[in-house]
Length: 73
Image (tube, rainbow, N blue to C red):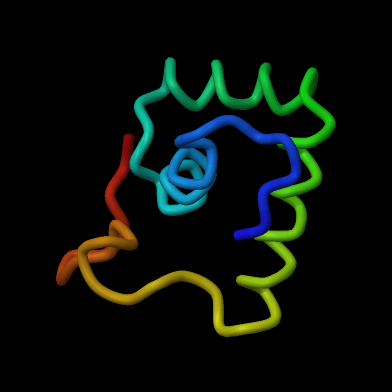
């Protein structure tokens, strides 16, 4: 991912959010930060667009989808 002023670890945080790997409190904190941080929002929006145009989520456990369907927080 291209660095546009986001902090180290933000790419993984975006992926964890989209894959449903964050707790409710982590999701809430991420959404609040997303609302305040224009650079983070820009990278997040690009990531969402990319996933929509290229088949969505990764397959398997890394995406949070197992044999029984998506994990619930």
